[in-house]
Length: 270
Image (cartoon, rainbow, N blue to C red; front, top):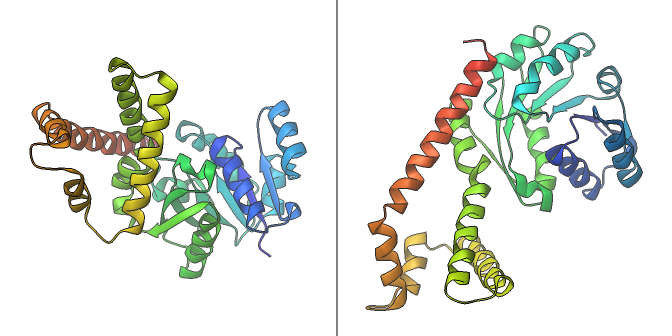
């Protein structure tokens, strides 16, 4: 079976390792890099996966997954360039970093795939978007889709859409957390204990998400089913519209897209 190295064992890197193990990968098929020795030792003890340096990762793996922060990718790619073997597939999970930057930092002809995951990977419910590079084959992109399928759902998109994906699903969980936080505060304002308000809202969010996933109905239809004439829900919706919540969400996601573009330009030195 294809051997995989994960460069960077933060939350996303750890979640990917755990998902691959849960999907049936043997610990010996996986390695990871981690710059903090205590963290590396803790992960090895818990997951049974060996910690190595970049050279060891390149020597071990047919697929190298780069899961570091965007601002750290340039030195990591420089280290990888010196040791990568021909035929290795490089997969980037770094937000905003274009394939041209990744491919340009590696030996000519290196196959690369760009991925935008999100933090629900930590519970096996990631939404990941995958884009192939100039030298990656359809089979290689499919292999990446299979890997990411062990920790959630996957879609394939043109790279030109990755900045929008970053803004929408990459940052998306934070928007939901922000909304839930505000709704819990509202419950407290209305006299509910914090724990009760949190239980009410988190379960409501979970149930609503499941309805969205399992129903063929448009979100508008699902919302209208809760919105009775002259009722409580329409009174709340009117206030949301009055305060421009819909427009604010659209502007926020557009700002996230613009920031993703800026990160890519910065990495490219433009």
